[in-house]
Amino acid sequence: MRTDPSFLAKLAGVSVTEFESINVGMPASPLQSASTTLNDNGTTASGSVWRDGLSIIDETCDETESVWDYYADDEFVGGLGLSAITRRQLSNVGEVVYVGNGIDPELLVPLATASLDRQCLQNQCRVNDGVIDPQSLERIVRN
Image 1 (tube, rainbow, N blue to C red):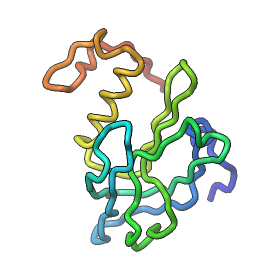
Image 2 (cartoon, helix red, strand yellow; image 1 turned 90 degrees about the vertical axis):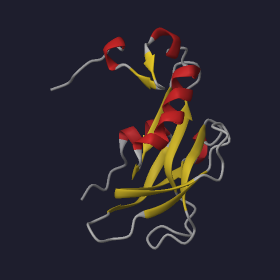
Image 3 (cartoon, rainbow, N blue to C red; image 1 turned 30 degrees about the horizontal axis):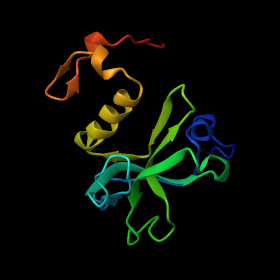
Image 4 (tube, helix red, strand yellow; image 1 turned 30 degrees about the vertical axis):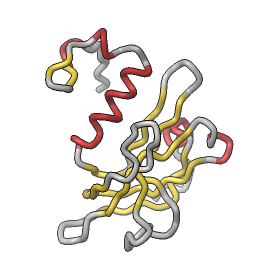
């Protein structure tokens, strides 16, 4: 088991406090939107497959926000004040979104759209029914 901190988590401004695989037959994680940026505070959802319990690192708290939190009554991480998804604004050079739960991908569309808007990319990409056409994005595939 890894005991060293994750470099990507540090870039995201979080530490992974807890983590667990959600096996078949286990209850899904109840989630609540925490984002004031997306104006959907209070929306509820559930996550499956895995759950990372994220704590925002103190030195990044001014630039990192929780987007989705675990409900206080979640059987694994409830009451610990942990986040499932966070977003960190990196000055003017971009942002890092840490998705620490298998949330319904449709619920991530507003987060992705807002991220593209902040980076002034949405107008440079073809958008069909609110979904970005991947053919209009430059991408790099690593092997």
